[in-house]
Length: 190
Image (tube, rainbow, N blue to C red; front, top):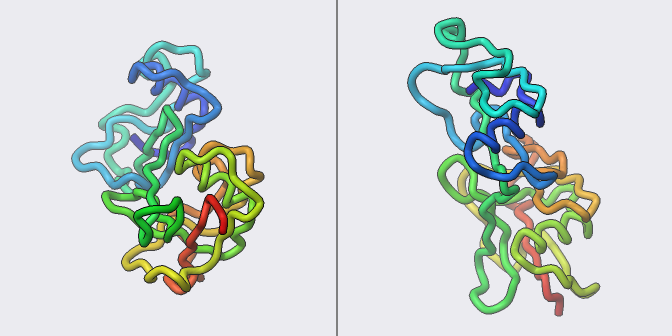
């Protein structure tokens, strides 16, 4: 499905079709974020109002009218608001280099503009709610730098979000990031 003109109304209908409850935590990622599909693109320009029980009841362009579209515009959804996340480098504490699952493998987060509000959301994603004042973040000086693609950058969280996907970040990261800017966190402080 093409991500062009995709919005939260379309997401609500798709979550309902998949048997999930749509909520403020639900989100979608454009431009093949979770990987590009193969074969024909079946639907694009989806125009749901949000109350439909099936996308077949929404306005849309259907194959073969979608023949010229590219899979680089595929949309991915998360109805439960979950992006797989992990910490690398420390087996005992909730501390380490932050990685999110993207396009088939785990990728680092660029720490440019990272602040306490972003830390709160990352720790929340890791299942930690009571984050002490001593919790901290830094570029990976204690932990090894990651390799491969950097999954996100320029997080702009206000601290209340359940996922960095709701923070207006660049996903994947902007080109001004390098692995020397990989972010590491310690959610329990020290």
